[in-house]
Every structure is written in C-alpha cells, then in structure tokens.
Image 1 (tube, rainbow, N blue to C red):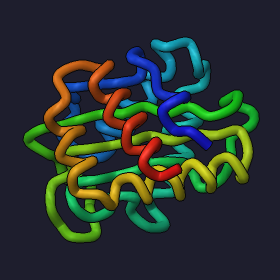
Image 2: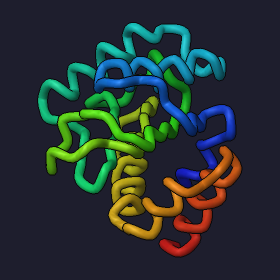
Image 3: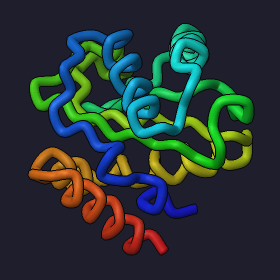
Image 4: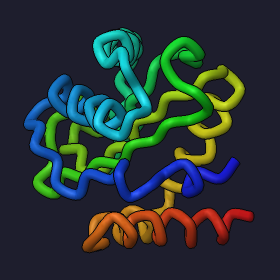
Length: 155
C-alpha cells in the first residue's frame, strides 16, 4: 500500500477555508467531487460524520484522518485520499484538545484497503519531522514529495 500513489496534486488543499469540523469534512469531500472521483457527496459526508459521532478522528499533534467507518464500494473505486492544511488550525475535537492543521480524508471501496491505508497513514503521521515538512511544503507537488519520501523510509 503506497499512500503517495493515490494522492495527486488535484487532491491537495494547501489553504483550507473551513473554520470548523463539519466544514472541513465538507471541503475535503467536495475536492473528490471536483476531481471527478465522487458523485454522491452527501452520502460520504454522512458516513464520515457518523464515524465522527462514534469517536473523533482528530488525533494528537494537529492531525486528523476523517474517514467513514467501513469501505464504501458504492461511492469510491479503489482508494481516494485528499490532503488539507489549515495553518492556523481548526477545532476538530482532537484527542489532545489542540487545533488540527493537517487533515487526510480517506475513503476506500473495501474494508481491507480502508484499514491498510489508515494504518499506514497513521504510522507516517507519528513522525514529527513528517508533520513539520507537510506544514512547510509550498505546493501540491511538495506535499506529494514529502509523502513519497516518508513512505520510502518505511519500506
């Protein structure tokens, strides 16, 4: 599973406009619509919000990985990833109570792909240098390069 191979420049939002959790989810999902990967945004938003109601996907260290609870074969083919950055941060009800600055929306067609991608991305995001480099990247290609280099170090 190579996260970087699923993340294209069109799926990188360097300056998110959202100011709250629901707005951030909607903005990330809308990116999939704009990229032609999703035709039923309301259904995906509903699935992600339902997952958030169980337990926040706002982790520690300014990171969130919003995702539906299960694979969504009727919505997505393969794996869809959107990266969003909010330098000033937003309240994502994170586990450490701090603002969230780095967001990765994940949606996969199967539970297996869903769990593998979630585990790999979580592992990458534990590295403080990786998070710092994501905050400093100046363009979508830079974000993708940071992800690719970090993944290369894992393998």
